[in-house]
Image (cartoon, rainbow, N blue to C red; front, side):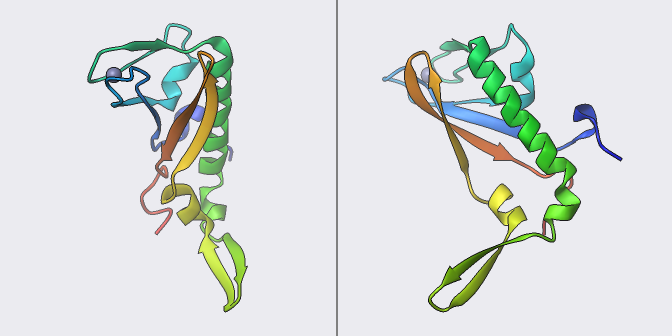
Length: 130
Ligand SMILES: [Zn+2]
């Protein structure tokens, strides 16, 4: 049975470097929060606030949809490998490792600047990907 967004557990966080050149702290927020039009990200160090425009919120909402789709397929992805051919033969990397151990970076236009957003996701159950 397909799970709804609300039923999908785990966390999907995103962070970016504070745009204040004298700060540079990581501004973190939960991907599920960006759907709200009044959402603001706040830098924990210099307290700068960031309002995300509707276009950027739309992109992050679609990213959340992607994370949700991955979560819904967790039981299948546990059996999926990505094969990389090297000179020594085929190397198999579990898909789950790609999703949970490697950092995904999405570069988006934010107030006229290209900003790297780091995406970190956790599986809904720690038992899923071992
Ligand atoms: Zn800051």
